[in-house]
Image (cartoon, helix red, strand yellow):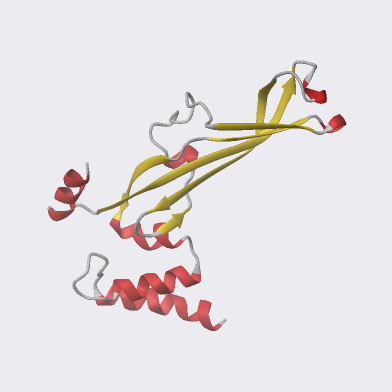
Length: 161
């Protein structure tokens, strides 16, 4: 896949790519078969109330990912079984539950023209580091000088203000 992507880039396609690790964890509540409150019995998962999806790219570190808009196939997590589930009876508050899924390797593709926004997460420190890399000639991160200057100028109010 990487060879095909690189070949498309070499032929002028406006794409960029990286690989990384996609991690998913959920918290919510469970239920007991009636004996679990006393340390015995079985628990079952009922509902997730929070879901945390994170993506760490090998070249750019942690970036935001929208599961509904950016994960393909759309139902990727639907049939996965959790690696780890924990249940904690809390008395009248019910049973708190957490589960973690195995980390998944991912290939991420985006328009090269959107790299700046994709890999910096609108974080000033990351944006500064990005501009430094982009201004370095002869590297895979190099960008035209006019684009570097435009990005650097947009950072001035963020750094000074």
